[in-house]
Image (cartoon, rainbow, N blue to C red; front, side, top):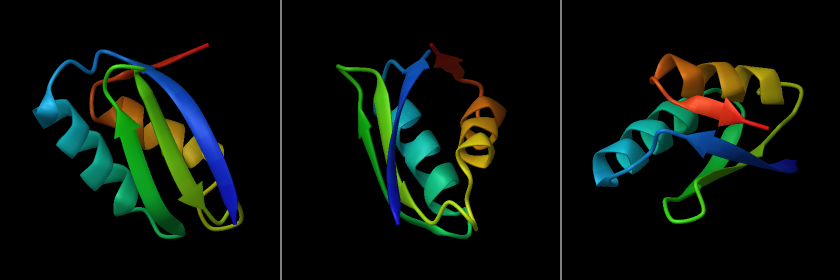
Length: 69
């Protein structure tokens, strides 16, 4: 299991938190998701073989948010 922290732009409310949490949590191989609205981060606990970081990033972007450097 791996823990990945991503900086995400565009999140501004609890709806954003729920949308990102639900979308990432639904990915196979993701065991936990925590969204920190104030810090603008998404932390995912995942199996890198089943849910690689690029897949998680793509799902967040699919929800309309930006992955920041």
